[in-house]
Length: 214
Image (cartoon, rainbow, N blue to C red; front, side, top):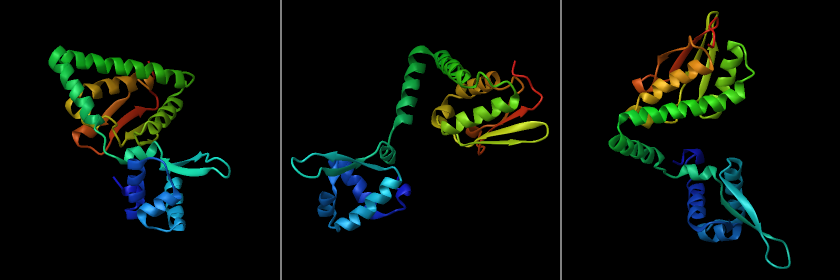
């Protein structure tokens, strides 16, 4: 949870204090943590550089406005979330009440939606190289940790992170639809050689350079 803070106990305390109390001035943080204002400023500067805190101004009548520090949206990721558990429970409820076929239908809806969205971004990409490069950039921006390598005959696209890994472990239908999605967006000759949920370090796709999209 605190790796981003380099295990600095004072910065952890500042984060927790801002989480509990909301926006605070340097003087308030200094008093609560028994640290000089200069010391607090140094820690706040480090946290600000990491994008974990922001400051707002507050008018106090006549005179200079006060600066109050608060957590950024990025800082909320430091605290435990149960999104994976919630989503998995929802899918299990759907399966129980409407059957496994409904799960497959949901993933098919997801696939078709992504295809529509991505086609708007890469619709002008005609060659295999252009489509593969565009897809790599899109996947990288979505947190897949994408890596693309090329040889004389094919491209190798490796995805080292699966944002829905825990869901895919239970419902492998999503992997089936992801493969079909890549075939429709990049090339019908694309194949998947490895998958993270099978214990491999990445989902690895091979795209022949001479392949066609349709």
